[in-house]
Image 1 (cartoon, helix red, strand yellow):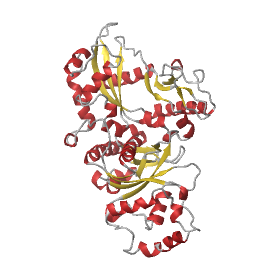
Image 2 (cartoon, one colour):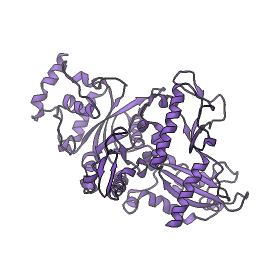
Image 3 (cartoon, one colour):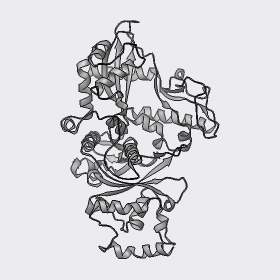
Image 4 (cartoon, one colour):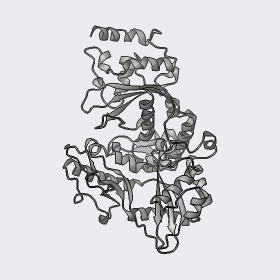
Length: 482
């Protein structure tokens, strides 16, 4: 206790003094000093009568005051301005298997719709604050005082040039939408790494936006959960205290050189263009895809070969797709225009559903609000199976459909909490509610953990086939009108 008190009594002396226990102008020095916080809580450095700050962002402020011995200020730039480095405290949670997981996206700064339209990327608050960050990961515990949260990892993260090129395009997409008076239509699925995430609660007052009289919900620039997950993945695999911007992935799809001239989407779509209207067998032959044994996933194999230029077997495991939370899905349209198969997603994690009480922090919200790349194959003659590559496009779920998805999630969560985990309780495809729940695992013994500890049959998130058809029909209308 005496050591803690002595530490605190020096704060007032050190704040305006060069005797800080690190070089305030040197990011690496600050990073090295941050390691002393790992395995500890801020209570270890707080005086006995210290009154903890409350609310979002309070942990970062207290870390500045109690550990880094800095005064909190309202300066718009980076926290460690002389080192041009921002301090960010971000929460982790633990799985049942005791693995560390990202709890939420990393919020960078609030978006003022009327001001941000006058900022170019290089002079934006986001760029000035977040191109270099000291990330302090801590273990979140519900109903725990902020002073008692334990810090786990410290990471000095400089946004790589390639990531910045993608983020810059994301920034421009968001700003362009705001300039069009469509801030109320912003979605995290509009972009790759940098999102415009919702802040506040439903019913909060709306914000003014330029070129529209319609108010827009509060949003902030954020690095998406998928992006943060890749950082955590690297830290865990390489050691607890990392200085790096390398992400472990199957492969990369595009280069920095190509991103200087074109957006990620433009590059990927250009790879499909030469194969449009071609028979899938001919494409497979040209791309060296072996479908001689008629594998069930042959269309996905072909789409992967085109999208990756034959660099990887699954683009969903590529660096860019992982960081963006982007998902490629293949769709087969029958000659009569119908889509026979519904679209499956991952199995429901009953523990995650039960423990998450915020739709915007749920796994399903992340999954459905992310961007998709749909690769469409269309049958030419009924029953012949003579599919051609018909279309490729990127897609984001609309706000109206996301609101329905929230009802879907609430229904799932209510049933999980009530231990009603069986077919009779879930939304069904025949309900025509766009989404449904059914198994993907075929084995009855294939069970998943449940909150009551008994386990239950695995069920999966699905898009109805009529919803997939609706997406395709809308796309076709846009093509015809375009």
